[in-house]
Image 1: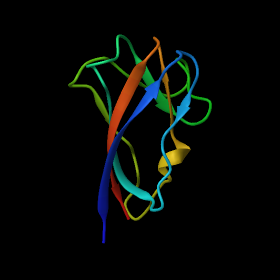
Image 2: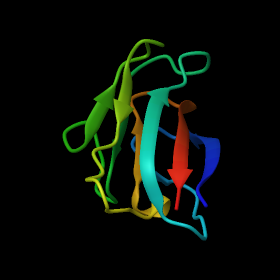
Image 3: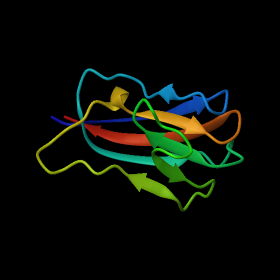
Length: 99
């Protein structure tokens, strides 16, 4: 049976990547969006080395979101993802379908 989880990842200090939360189940579908309500700049999502030059960029626009590319029949660990911000206190919000 699948389940849904949603949450927020806040980067207090720009340039310092923050890990997504861990879950017991693996992710089979994931959407990530810049939390435009609190973010005053770009957000970056990727692996441990995420930065302004390495990862996906999300604008501070509610229409801009990322649907993480998980191939059919595969899954990922949510805590393999990291977020970074162009300005302090930036955040991304996410919703994920778990196995």
